[in-house]
Length: 157
Image (cartoon, rainbow, N blue to C red; front, side, top):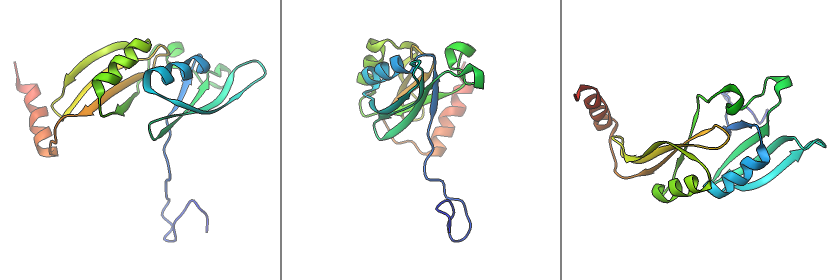
């Protein structure tokens, strides 16, 4: 039996990793260490200096990184003019992490504020074009209450 499947034949997914494409992975690793406390696990570097693959850990999560490889269609947000993905870091002290990220060089996209879904959150953009939604728990909200509050946002004038 393959490690990929269970006995009943259902596929078992073990992990999902974000893989960030960057115009300067080495600089990004340094930024992520200062902004989010990332720890570098390892990196593979070509003789030219281009980073082919690196892994960092932010909290319990591993992120994979690489420099751009335009010859293979691998481009980062700065090259393509933006990103359609936001990475969410949920933390015990979001105000502290937000300040830390901005001090490290992140740009505020959306300032911190208390949200209807029971979280205090805000968004920053790193110097490489990736957006990070930083949030922390402030109250327990049921899905029903969350929907009620969400609907109310659209009816307020």
